[in-house]
Amino acid sequence: MSAVDYRTERVLITGASSGIGAEFARRLAARGADLVLVARRGDRLEALAAELTTAHGVRVTPLQADLSRPQAGAQLRDVLAARSITVTSVINNAGFGTEGPFHDEDGVRLQDEIALNISAVVDISRTFIEDMRGRGRGFLINVASMAAYLPGPRMAVYAASKAFVLHFTEALWFEYRGSGLQVFALSPGATQTEFFEVLGNDAADGGAQRQTPQEVVRAAMRALDAGAPEPSVISGRRNRAAAALARILSRRHAVMLMGRITARAA
Image (tube, rainbow, N blue to C red; front, side, top):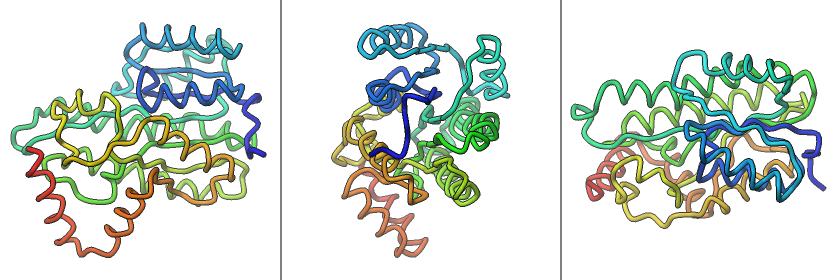
């Protein structure tokens, strides 16, 4: 039996227009959860909302928003409050990466990356967590990445941003143990999404075998069903083995290994 009664949940999912976010929406709607879907591409959100409402009879609210702007959480809260919508669980999935030598990166693009991957995750989590904690149930999932476990030459800002999400969320897992609120970080490896298209280099994963969004979300749902006993969930056996290896390498060997992998992908 699931540790969550999804029929009592209204889940806010960021980055919900495609990939892992859209798969979370489909899986949760199938279990009876109402949804708030947030992304920049409003047309895709509208189409997904219509699909899920028709298929499962749940209430789905699409919200077009740019979460890289300041006070993203407060703005979402205000829009939802005006519609008398209460969020009970949150999945912070929105994010993107940049790739290339650091000195060649666009400074504005890097600031947007930090704002979306880090600031929005913190702001949205802080905005909604007090109400979620007060209910004594529900969940907060922050999507990190296997990039969080090792430094990322040529993807330095992205890897560092995901390391922040990982450590931040693991700390929250400890803080809210026993509250009834489930908290964990979800770390996918290379996944068949639009990530590499946005990145601009389809070979940036170094030839890694890619998972599907369905496989990634399935791992997260298993953790929810088990009551989130661990602060981190890594999807895929190979990824778990890679994370274990990262823990025993010296810092020098870790960055040298990743440097060789990313150099091949350049």
